[in-house]
Image 1 (cartoon, helix red, strand yellow):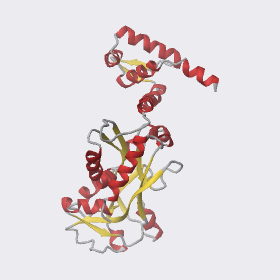
Image 2 (cartoon, one colour):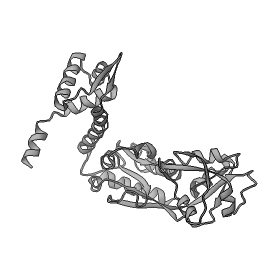
Image 3 (cartoon, one colour):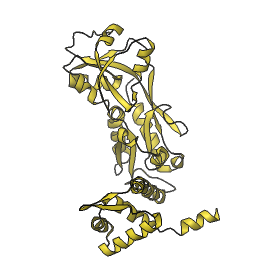
Image 4 (cartoon, helix red, strand yellow):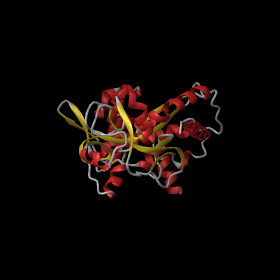
Length: 309
């Protein structure tokens, strides 16, 4: 333990701030302006960082600078580290929602935001009028190389139950899969059959480059191999691409019903049991006893409790 304390004590946290500014700006002058330092002072900090990491970090290419491979890794880690330090020193032993001006952040899919975002923001305004909430896109955030580090920098992530095992979590709401088809698509009945769905061109949502939405695994179990015409990275785009076409897609029922009128689509039952959708809020164990975080978890649960069955 003593060796660790010595190493930490020898570090200058101002270098971390400088590192983050230099790697994000990729320009000594702009980084200096962001830090409130002169160009010579910022250049001296860059020299210290280069000696520390034994790496150029920024390499000149023509009239600009590019990040070295190590610098690309450090850019993400430095931003996460600064956020963790700020959150650590902002933690307090008590929390008063009526007077706080704290900013919270949650990572969630476009689908989850559409389902519970409005009641959550309404409750936040009612119970903590000075607080703010940033809802970050799951598709971008989930590509972070270090999920544990990402969880440290936000108040929580909304994911399907079981997706992030090993972290504390609470179930928020249940949903089920539905088929969407255009209102004027005569090939798809109001109770689609497996034959109708097999013949239709499908659109899918890619959670990862090699993974599509859950119903396809169940369809395959029934010997059905739908023809996939295209894919998108979010659920919200699917109804717009299905509208006015012969395409179909599988989306959560709550989303399908909410967008049906606006997109001239129908929310239809799947002819198979694709299993439930259980959305959960997970967070890093470091946040568990934080009074502000505890309050936010209850707020999210209360908002989801208002959802219709």
